[in-house]
Image (cartoon, rainbow, N blue to C red):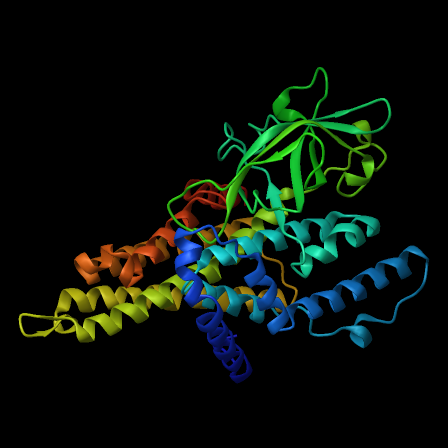
Length: 412
């Protein structure tokens, strides 16, 4: 893939029209008020048929799993396959939303991360019970791993626990912070450690549970105040003696693991999240460049547009180089994903590291081009900077991306 197709360009135009009509007028409430984005997301899904596409794919996937479970033979993939792997619509949504409200992408994306964890690791029963409502955005999801004291050492420093009882249930205790959708989540993918006597806490098994809003002992905080991504509600979770039956253990039970726990792989979710941030970065860069080019033509200093000065031209040129680099990374990712070519954890980390650093640098230079005006909310580039800055932190900090890349290189 080297450029957007005509069909994709048309789709992007329709998405942009929707955003300008339905989201831009609400930007003040999303940024400075308490308007949750979830009704907007649902309307977006309905308008572009994303909910129905998700429902159809879900039903097809479940039918296939049930057929296999019943010992039925399936037609060869070439006879039944459909082009259902195309990521372009999700990518275009992310790109266009990040021009005005990147937080909506985060809120929407984390619900899909929760859905993805359930759909990739869950049993058929779990997928039916929780997966579909998340995939169609009828319910809000969160993915709870970060804790107040763990930071980047998410697994080693994790203190939230699950204790297996004699009745076969689990008792969950602990707290989570910086949880996207936390205040409003209906379904929570909660990651903790099995409480095992005589085992070093850092070496205990990772457990993943599916929790519902309103369970006894589960408290969801209000919205936390933060620098950017205001259209994405962030909160804390507190668990005090929450009882979770084995049907809530993601993937169910399997033999040969202590306590009947089947270990899931949150790192796979991390990789998907890191790759997804690339399109967000591109959206920020494209919007910054667009605003800066327009401003450089109109803003006059010393009797000529500032775009005629070489220092401003250098900044614009650097922005365009960043845009091209990120776009090429994104096209490569889409092409590989559509062809079923896996991307390694290190490759996803490399894409995130470069694209997010570039987005922050471009947004910072955009403020510089706008000067004092750039520091004011009216000119929008300050919001783009605030929204971009967290991208170098969430989904793994820059330093963690470097660690993943270097480990991969040194292991060869």
